[in-house]
Image (cartoon, rainbow, N blue to C red; front, side, top):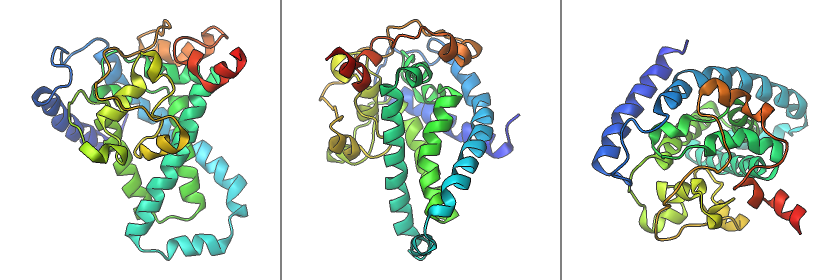
Length: 272
């Protein structure tokens, strides 16, 4: 069902992060086979198929709509840059798109239903990074990729971003106590992203960036206390099986769910 390259990547990631989490655990009491881990294995193995087809449709349609409006001189200027500069620019532009899309999924009640599936994770580890509803993944990734394709970044620069994104995504969810010191303000780490998943009032709607925490500093959404969160997840009753989570956004109650949606900008505006 998935190609050989994907399988090799999954195996390499598992062989790196499983020992790493055992050697340098953040939550040492957490079992390797923590709650609902089989459900997240299913996401790891099969969710990518839906995401790939969905992204082909969304990105393809977006390029047909906006591609003709991008000046040829702009794409030529982008492509004339050295690869290292394109890679840096691609990372910045893609993460801005990710930040905006991610924040929107928190702010809009209907979109939050899709994103709540990811936030239903109650024990963080490398495997938890893969529990993302296909609709959430397709739209958020498309917000990162469409600007890169529209601006004409080289395939090599896009590939560099993709590799950084995938490895960083797994790392920032991992159950590790690795910290980056002063670099924590520049590069996303578990310390940064675990607070995005924290089920604590002060952490609601914080730390939206995927790779670059300073985007949250600019956006006024940065939170990085010295301590680490004690509790993860959401209070709403999100089901814990893959097929149930796929349909959950379409059958959930229309009202925005607690706790994170209640603290979203959209909900906050309604309460004022």
